[in-house]
Image (cartoon, rainbow, N blue to C red; front, side, top):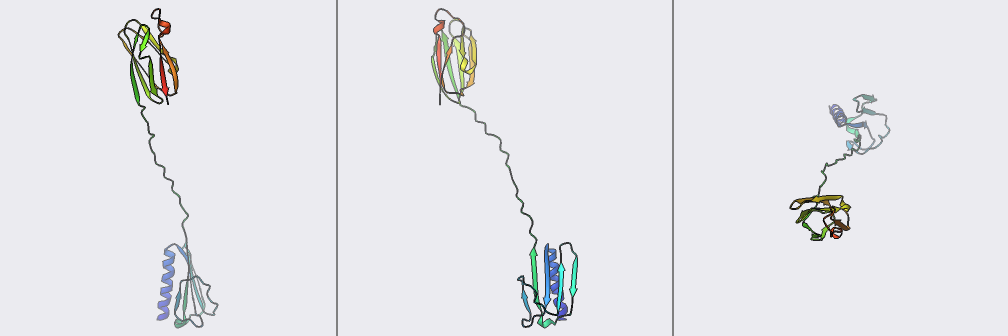
Amino acid sequence: MHRQMLKIAAFGMVLFLAGAGCQSQVSVSTPPSEPNVVSEKSKEAEPTDTVVKETVKTDSTMKKEETKTPNVAEMKIEAKTEAIVAPKVEAKVEAIVPPVVLTPRTEAFFIEAKQWEFVPATITVNKGSKVQLVFQSKDVTHGVSLPAFGKNASLSPGQRVEMEFIADKTGTFPFTCSVFCGEGHGGMAGTLIVKE
């Protein structure tokens, strides 16, 4: 009776380990002086003339070798278990973040064009700013040319003309009247200063 219960318990342990995805080897032997000892350490079975071996592999095939039936009172059970470890999986998560678009600060100026000057004649802005220059002629047709930023426009009397650009470089840049407006035309100029 005890022998059958021990065999069932050993077989149940083998099936449990096989179900957990492990390779197991259970050996039952009769040692000379250690009755009824259960050990979970991996050891070699001591050589005796009475051995029962059961091996279960993950493909559910079973091999059984049996010699003499041991005495239940003198049995020693050794369990050798080797876990099958899944390969390491690395997950790379990339967040999709929309680019941050910074709207440049707008710096706006009203400039009056009249014979033979721009008022104000000097405009100072910060690099990276959106510059808005609003020109209006007070007397005759004038023009305004700001070649450093590719701007040129004609100014009819009383009409407002707007120029917009990004001040993307530092320095001092002249703007001039680009339409002949009389004898002082050549000296009609202003300065745009872009600072860091």
